[in-house]
Image (cartoon, rainbow, N blue to C red):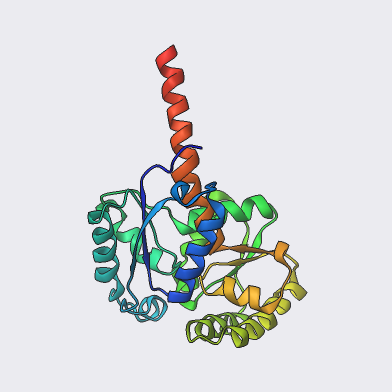
Length: 246
């Protein structure tokens, strides 16, 4: 087996439970069969970064310095590739992406690509109020020609409540609240739920909702990171060999 290409830098802590779940999902997605075949990961878990959703709703850039400092620090620690298991943080990341010294796996692109494969007809967007208000997912989905449905205000309030409960460590209660929101969405149209907040996959799993009716942003990010670390270098090497033989 080919060794992973480089070191993955993860800026976590937004929130801590989602970061832990991302690392677990990554470990089962890489093709390694021994410890030595897994990627080297440097993790900076920084829970002191101000809440991204409330900052966006308030028009504040408070999370921006901490996010930029964290990603720059990871690159300084030797990261060749960056990942941030927090959807709302990517609103700020998009503003500084050209300042990053190494590439970043974008959670929105990874999640929407997974959604398009699972459900070409479209999906429900479940995310924090800040992510929804920012249009982060809606703009990219429009560019891709993908149908993304935003919940009505009442359902959105339940989605937000579920995310807050998971952050507070009340995952089972968050699952019950999220299940209520999701079942309401499915009464309108039965399309997969895109959990575009990294706490919501935990709520979805806790709720016991059907596995095949969701796209986890955590799972999509983990899969995309594994692809970048293991598959993309092989594709590039193959292309270089073909060019050299011409």
